[in-house]
Image (cartoon, rainbow, N blue to C red):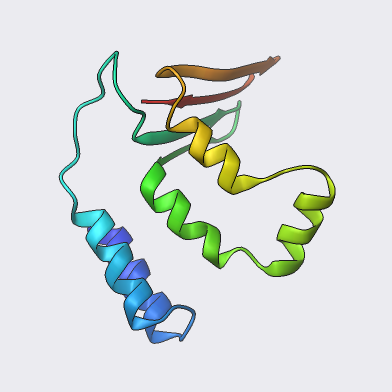
Length: 117
């Protein structure tokens, strides 16, 4: 968690985010983290990419993901919208779906998993 706080402060220092945005991000990082349950609303988006040479794990609170939408460049949002991708709608629906694995893709030794809890 200390690393994430430092990243937020670095983004503030570099002028990439405002003081208000930094405060919201820091509050989201300090919020008590609840244990996942089999029922209830989803709180985390988790992505795992594993291959022969590398492994990447991303654990993102859905509340922070919603806040991060504001940092996506407008050009990227326009391109996604042209392809029918509405990230706000997706994140809203993710918080309502049943907790569990959403996607698993295997290709040889490579594995991609996406789930919410």
